[in-house]
Image (cartoon, rainbow, N blue to C red; front, side, top):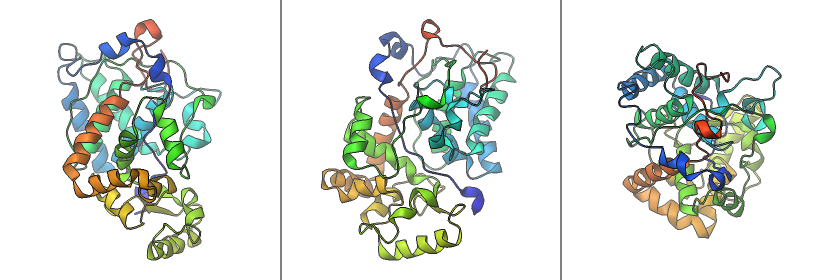
Length: 319
């Protein structure tokens, strides 16, 4: 089970949306590569399936990677860049819980795409990440949705650019962060439902055990046993069906079994409780709203050649 460990992830967005030129969003559309790389989606689907067969952590890790990428500089695959001086996004402390399996999903899919002569070096890493996130959801039992494509890859990645919500954020703090994108409270909540996949390491929630009255007592006892014996390497699942994309996450919040404080607050705060209850009893509504919010998130900070975008040959390095 240790192979399933996945640290804290949260769906995030950035203020870059307000600065994004309208032309960048206008270029996004399903079928963008229909004449450039007609087999693109089938290639990515097959590659992600192979990655998931190799490790059950692949799906949650790839989904989380997409969120963390869009949260910094926009959805431009800057999270994938490796700088020789160590000054890159993934080496910021807030990204240290990102798992190697997530990066490998993207590298595998990129290699598979470029192995097709018609597609070689014509598909951006950013678009491959968006498709891999969709496949991670679908192949885990979640909803299928059309992915808007046409993103270009960014050339910059720095530690200092990382701004992410933390596991102890209040509802006001979460709303403040997401409102920078024009995302509503309901959209923030439905994106948080992505926590239906994966797990979190003890340091992200251990402070709540025995001190947070909103945590179910038996759940707290279970977590205490896990983290007391493994304070640095211990982990717990974000919900009770960690490899299945469903609405269990919201039902867990109703019973005080939200792992992260920033998740449980969505139920304990009466201003957001109604939305949690709605998704807890209506999985179809959760799926539909999640798709809409993911599409909106995928438009954040989109790059074009005019704004310094490129199509990287190797996702780890600018051309």
